[in-house]
Image (cartoon, rainbow, N blue to C red; front, side, top):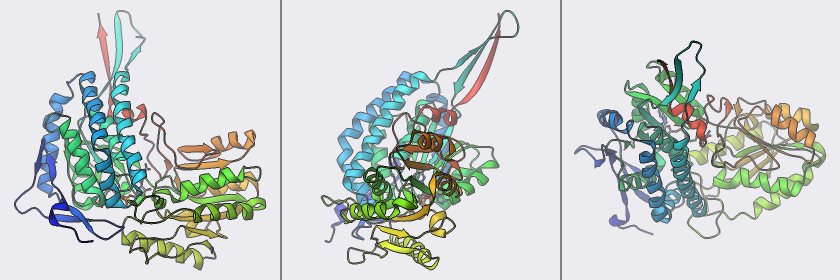
Length: 485
Ligand code: NAP
């Protein structure tokens, strides 16, 4: 279907409370992976525009840090209400830009609303500490203070909720923000920013820079006025940012990749396990940091579990995320689709067998890949070690709990582990033994609730946590005040 020009969206930069562009501004395209149609174009920020945005945030900080927390919370409460009004519209654009089913996109806007409400309330609990003094006539208190300009850099798989975790925690704590979203979802970011603009936040408190990660992201990571980098994305880029930002001693919070596993012991409820596996592996077309990409199953129940997982996967409708009933959309772009193909090919070369799928669905479009299950995988195979970020699930057979946990912990990642068992003993041990930031017992790998610390261990992060009040460990620093009287 051809699009008229007026249907196309255009995103500019949002700096100091205004939508800006230069005469010579270059624009990049946002392409719908389901149809290959143009969704719209977005401004690619230049290095000098990055300077402008950081300066605007830095100037706004001197006022914003001195506003009261209830005043900041009032903005977030308003933001939550305004997102309700634009939920459907924003969800549509998200689905068009990155392909996930509309129901998932609507759910994601719901998370943004919940995060705004949660952080508005949590601001009231930015408590300090009173410490008993070692000398008479002295009081000692410790207070949390904001740091200044926070650069938030986010990926495309959750275009707005991951931003809301960072942006709302930064704002309620009294920091100001420059946000660089992933290029694939720059138009979703534009709508997010329109909502914040409508809430009437003071000019410069939040700024949006779209454009290449290499130019905008790197400039932010090395900018002397940026005090915090809050990054969610690949481990590789996270490592680069950590290195670059170390020169100016920035605080950096990293939420990175995963190679998450579902362990299934022989006493597990296999129907429940199959349900959890399929949902964790294939929703968002496997493009979740917490997606299950390994099933580590006791040899005695492998065949039965595999059959159930295949049967449930075959029921999943694949197609354009805007179409009713679709639960698996396309991958985000053709490049990601080719990457998945390469991983599957390599898995076969290393000895795996295709139990389901194993091919691109070019009859649907350039970015579709069949949900794929690879059997006979060994823990040292590439497919069992590297993050694919696509609808590919590896089955690894083991003998009992000890081997299962050793395989689970045998990757460089440590984001999410799930175990299905009826044994209190093994469930409790797994909670302790799994080297991952998230552990789920009799639940899939992918489930985050508001107020619960979210983040990974090992190469899945650098120890910081989001979603909960622990986000303030990133967004504030402690000041100790001694008073002699
Ligand atoms: P990515 O390639 O690392 O990109 C993430 C963000 O960094 C984008 O905004 C990107 O901008 C920017 N960027 C890219 N190269 C950069 C550079 N050299 N310097 C500074 N910034 C740069 O990740 P992605 O492909 O968008 O997302 C997938 C990854 O995110 C997966 O590894 C997934 O596991 C991880 N993830 C982790 C979590 C978590 O909470 N742990 C959640 C979701 C996703 P451009 O788009 O312009 O390149």
